[in-house]
Image (tube, rainbow, N blue to C red; front, side, top):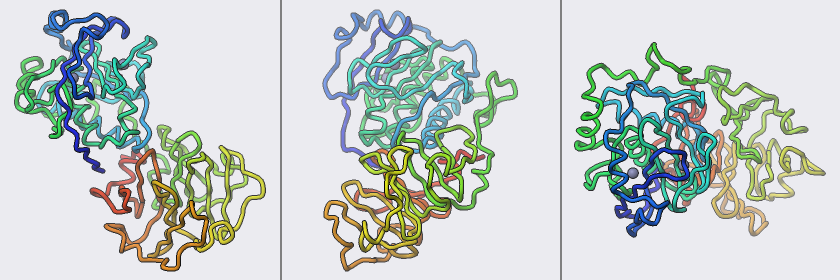
Length: 421
Ligand SMILES: [Zn+2]
Ligand SMILES: [Zn+2]
């Protein structure tokens, strides 16, 4: 999961009064190595900021939040669980509880946005393209992450968690700290704290008190004002295996199992017929991917199908052996390479096909999957999502680096991808 970047982000404290984001005050976390002065921005200055933010706090202890959209490049539920961790990191120490809601009528809206965006119907923007995120003080609290950085430019989940904990700090009323030992330091440092540090804990407790009751944030409290945290309890959660995972032309992550698919970008996705989405496609496909040309390819037995969006191209299915000589039939899955080509997996073996050469698979294939660093013995599915590659085996998933080695620990597919209880 981790792709650390060897960058050190020097502090930049940028406070300003927003002239574009309704009347609220927000703080940005710039991704910048030069000081970045408030006078550049919307006519604000730090003195004004200090006056305005004095004593900003929520006058209630149960706050609802909603994730308005999800970025490309990571499983939606990894975002959901990471944001949950970030809220839990604060409520562990102070008398605040957070509940996720599906409704947009929440205290804190979180969203992934481009430089110019809207917030609750009003224009909002990052002052610079390189801004990581910004957040509004109480009792507003909204948080916007720069979707360019999270995750198309390869930020790690640890960097995202660090920024989420920081921004939530602002949403709760904390200002920047000048200490590099604080999560509220104004820029991302090499040391990525994943929770409030001693001075942050003291600061939040000065506003909301020391946590007195056991933490109840993992379940909505009985008096929850919003709908409970959405959880999937459909057939998806009872699947013991699936055929493959593929993104469609719009980037929806679809799990294919037998005759059905589930769109993981929906909440509680129902089983839908594969043949209704991709007319002419048979059930029980072996492998699938959407290539850089946005065409979607499906493989089954000794044939493959090619779709332009949701329409099958002419003269398909075709023969795998003819179009991709040396690639086996009855594959378990295909993993696209970050450059050109793909790995095909079957049983305990794999083959590599180079799409630049369009020549038969080289003679030294097949090789043994166990020779690939850290791979499970057999694969069920594989997915290129944004810039990241994942493989799936026995309802566990693994991230694969550019050298086709496993990075980090495996994760639970049902928890992080299917959002099951
Ligand atoms: Zn900040
Ligand atoms: Zn914004």
